[in-house]
Image (cartoon, rainbow, N blue to C red):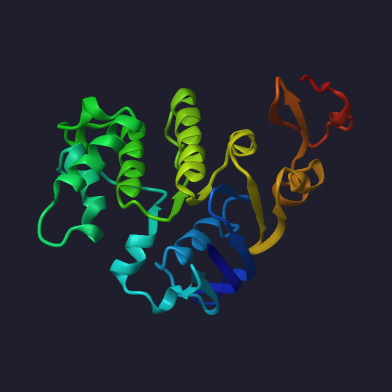
Length: 264
């Protein structure tokens, strides 16, 4: 369980998060939604222990996050930042770095097997000996996700994990995260901009507006009204062949809710 209680944070005099309270349950994928500058990445960094809140608390399995050491946090929480730069290392070694919190003296056979399994899951096995500096942005994105998974954390915090991936890899990565959440009872939290992808693969949604929680819950909170309040867009939400889709319209479009029929 990951719990945020009345969290506030500021960069100097600029208030970014105000009185944020959220709970995240094992086995679920939660999407953090909001416009640029609404505090999504700051919230994720605070939950990863990278930023110290001005007020409020964060608990992991009942323990105060601020009381845990860096290694203790790393064993519990895997964090993927929004931007990651490749270093001069092979893909295998880069993913193996995710095992650091578990390695006492040197990598064990179990550590190596964990890395191999994750590379296969993310279809990166053919890249194992390639340098990360030779990868495309999308390939590097998958390597960073793999490194976070290699920690075998109980909580995964991912900041825009599919932003540089093509549509096939976006769907496969989100499906993998949802499957891992369910099978391993992980808390998975993603910051994501693709609203339709979020609706398709997430169980819960937290919508941030100007640093505050505007709505929090299941698919019922993602409505044309919340889209308008949070994103300042007119939008219809339809189900096509069982898949929920957000259809945005220009501001001047008045009858947007009547333009598409629901398909099942």
